[in-house]
Image 1 (tube, rainbow, N blue to C red):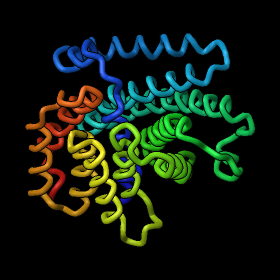
Image 2 (tube, rainbow, N blue to C red):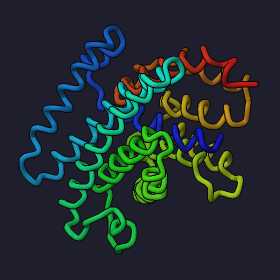
Image 3 (cartoon, helix red, strand yellow):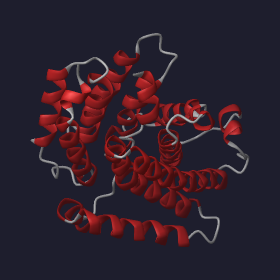
Image 4 (tube, one colour):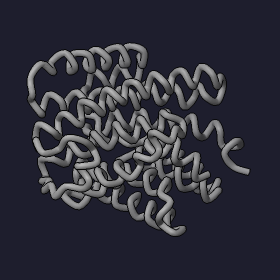
Length: 283
C-alpha cells in the first residue's frame, strides 16, 4: 500500500486551484474534449511568452502546464492503466515529459526571483528567506515535481526527490497555511501518506491536513474529500466511510465557490470512477 501511495500521492495536488473561467467550466462539464483542447492552447500560449526573464510569466507557464497535465493526462492514465497496461504506461510517459517541462519553468521562475538558486539541492541547503509572494512559486514547482514522481511509476530517479516536494510544501505551509482555500493542506493529505518517516502516524497527520483543508475551504473543496477517501480511507479499508464521503462529493454544490468549480468538477468525476471500483479497492 505504501508503494501505491508513492506512485499516486499527488493525484489531487491542484484540484482546488483552478482559476475559474465560466467558459472552461462549461466545456469541462458538458464537452470535456473541447475543454482539453482549449486548455492545451492556453498552455502553448504561456510557453510562447517565455522570451524574457519575467518570473510571473514562468509562474503562469508552470501553473497552466501542471494543471493541464494532472487534469487531462494523469486522469486518463489512471483509468487506462486498469484496462490496458501498455497504453496506460504511454500516457504516463507523456505526462512525465509534460511535468518535466513544468519543472523547468518552475525552477526558472524561482531562480529569477532568487538569483542565488542554481539547483534544487541549493534550494534546501542555502539560507534563503521566502515570503508570501514566493508561496505560489514554491507550490507549483512542488506540484510539478510531485507529478513527475507519480508519473514515473516508481523510478528511483524521481522517487528519491520526494523530500524536495515535502520541503516545498512545508515551506509554503509555514508562510501561509490558508493559501488558496487551504490548497497546501489538501496536497499534504496524499503526500503525508507517502512519507516513511512518520513512524506510523501517517493517517493521524493526513487527517489533520484534511480537517484544515476543510476549514480553510469551508467544506467546499471536493478534491480534498476525494483525496482523503482515496489515500486514507482505502488504506484503512473503511469501505462505508469511503462510500459516504464520495457520495457527499456527488451531492455537493460544486459551483458555490467559483474559485473551486473546475477542480470540483474533476473531483466529482474521479469520485464516480472510484465508487465504480469499490469492490476492487476493498477486501
